[in-house]
Image (cartoon, rainbow, N blue to C red):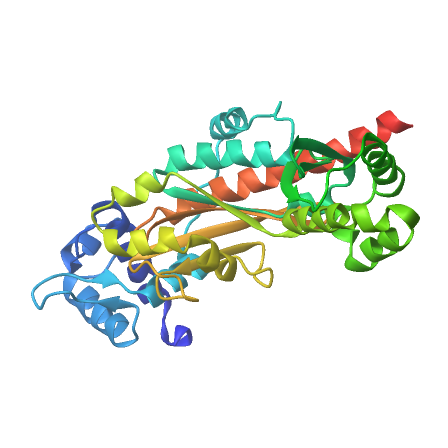
Length: 347
């Protein structure tokens, strides 16, 4: 269908979408004819709008009204017609100031970007964090908290901490707890979270000798903590911005928030390119008349997370997309530079 569009129709479609994004009202031929780069009569524009409607790029909500864009119209606009707004040096400084460059972990850095993006766009923001997979285990502790009750604590090089309560069938002696702490330090310290497999845990269990019976439940708890680090974590910021929208169903937003982890894992699939735009009808996204723009964050060339915006379909894509791409690009640079600096310090 795109091949059926000549340059004039493409200009008219882009102009209709630009006007609709600003006003939220159906756009008529007289509005488009008044634009300086559209040098044809309102009658010609009406004919072209009718063709664009037949092709599925525009629709007419009422017989006497102007046109509004469809999902297909927005898709073509974003892919081919949109004039993305270049980010000025002043905007770059503003976005850099929004990033917490002193953040102790990559997670905290991405979180600061998420909050800033929510405030700048008045939308909800979504973060998909898989960076813990790149971390190594720095410490495993066991802490007695009551009769036969123990807390396992795992800390990684990225500053992430997880804990798990373990109920044992008997109390551990100081000697057993000291052995466990030493055993963990000798065998797991410096091991990548992503590499801690069931096979490694089984070998550690078999090598414990006389401590096997008493300490195996704790080792299984360590394996569960590691699996928790491996799982993708999804966080939303600025949900109130979605709820405040008059052009998105509050009931659909509520359902989305109840099932956000399941929905977002599908929408943030690794197979998509570095930037992905989805609409309310795409891929099981459950909010009609909405859009989601997500850009990937990388660390040393590998996927380390995603940052994006969830808002109305009538979004200023030409402004928001460059903001997201700039922030994810800066985060990618910063977390990669951090590794280089650490390598220099070790030398």
